[in-house]
Image 1 (spheres, rainbow, N blue to C red):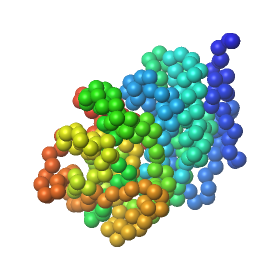
Image 2 (cartoon, one colour):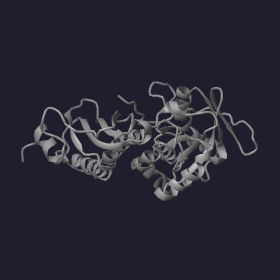
Image 3 (cartoon, one colour):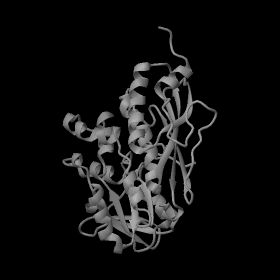
Image 4 (tube, rainbow, N blue to C red):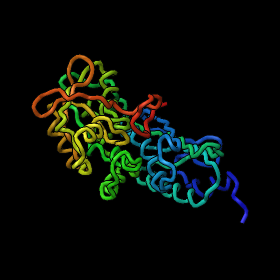
Length: 334
């Protein structure tokens, strides 16, 4: 059987009917409409083999994760997904890999209401390269920007922290082999769930938000920098994933404060919103933990249960730092 051409691969694995009112794969540009009174939210993310994901990763989980980390950006803004595009660089054609990748990608796209409308496919001489652009809509008054935090706000985080970082340490041999701990932690790394419903519900409730891709301290730091304020965090209030139990304190602290690849939301809101936020978490089935307070000044201080300062050395992931702790799927909006 002759090998498929680039265009046959696109048509077979990635061409799906576009929703009504949109033009998808098969033309020079995708076309989509934004409702009156809404703004278009756009974010682009690149994932590179051996930098953002490990070689040999299950292609179905990679297809899911590649889209999930982009959808998490929309969640952090409070946007509703509309559509996405995919640019895919492959070192060679592997139809079994494409079958799994496209299955994971399209399953999440359908669940999130974010159909694939186009992109590009090419040959990559240095491993797999993925670049995804997501588009969503939101009402301007409900946009969750990083610059909105205010002195006196509570700091909240959704879900739990640390599992993806622990899975990575185990896979890299930086923790003693522990198959049970790896089974419990790896789904958080391979199958992140973007908090889309939560982000949309926080519009008009939260003052500022960000998703945690590079670690809690680093990503919260972006809010503080753009909001011109500081933060106090309670180490004991941080919602640790159960797989952190039994780890030495240093590793546990690193996982909670600096471990990336989390894709939970960190957000700030007035104290008078506490009951409303807890009710929202209960309605959505998402644990929400209040972990600290926005204060005047700059920087982040972390305190233990006795009120003592906790020394912090691991701040999070930086693509160009010499000692970054782990592969990462951090993103920047375009």
